[in-house]
Image (cartoon, rainbow, N blue to C red; front, side, top):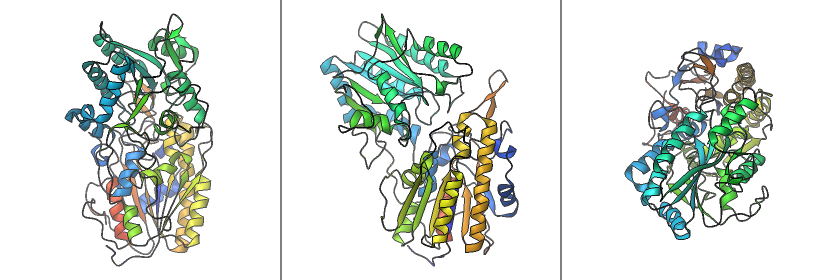
Length: 528
């Protein structure tokens, strides 16, 4: 319900991938020249927020946060079971294997004596997928009478150590060898690096998806006798290549691919995170698909681990029901007639809109919500580490000056997207670019009397090196488990942040408090 509404506009800045290092290893945030962020942390009310594990609905505090669950928590003020935790619960309870979708996939294979294909990211990173889910589904498929299984594996090196692919390939090959017998035939069929094929997002590079489609579906590409041979060969040929950038490969016997996807087969995309699962799902599901020429499209039963977009109903079939996020901050603001503006570049546009609004593509109010996407550069982000920070800042300032909006939010992707390249020097530049943007926003905030909140969704740029098991320093491209900042900038009020252990889900209640609104009872507490 509406309270004594503060009509001072509030701007929320999400510095994607910017946390506080605990190790000091490859800490691009500290190494960067950030006079504005440094001054804010010294002079303005601030605290550190937990942005991983149980604070964002993941199974344990060993699980790194990510931009999707982070923006869910930021935008809804609550902690929902997410990702791996959601799938874990479905597998442990048996609900997945009792579902109509699982039974349809299995029955289709049995009726046609056809193959069940598993496609997804092969690691235990718990950001997009978990190898344990794949293994349990393969075991269950055999128990259910499926006779042929093929695995199409995308190599990680981003949410796990950069060159760890063979650890997961060996783990999968060991399982398949233990299951194979006269009644069951399971093999790895194809693969490639996650940043080379299949796992594009936000329709930024359909060529990646086309390359994956041709590899997995048509068995087109360079042939190898095994995934191990493919990985070792590419590593020998391409100096310094990390797993996410390994080219596509096809496993073949006597010159023939072992696992083309054919009419009558079933296909499961076992990733649980949606952003990089949507485009390949469109290729399988959409009849009027035009993004690339699919060639002869096989007639298959296709399902995702989750439904990755509820509004687009994509995919149509899925194994685990997603969290039904209700009572978001956007709903509260719309109910109170407050106008919102959200902006980022392509790489994080979906985060300040779809994920922020509780995994919903549509607005709660066309009249009260305005979204702006700034197209990202289609280059490796370490080549242009400033990304679109200047353009985002320009747009943000225009929205502030317009006087049309009560709540404005933006995401600067630099710390995360440049951090993922493993290039420390470039990431330092990326973080510095964000600091320059913040300086410009604060100057306009002073002029207009606007409150500015600054936070992040998870860490990344703060920990770009790590020690391996041998104690050697190596490049780290994954998110960190580090806390992130939360800063209040308001020249007219000296806010005091409560004592306590807060997480990302405490941000929405704090925004509501600034507007004089009463948050729903299901929310976490306000920090002020």
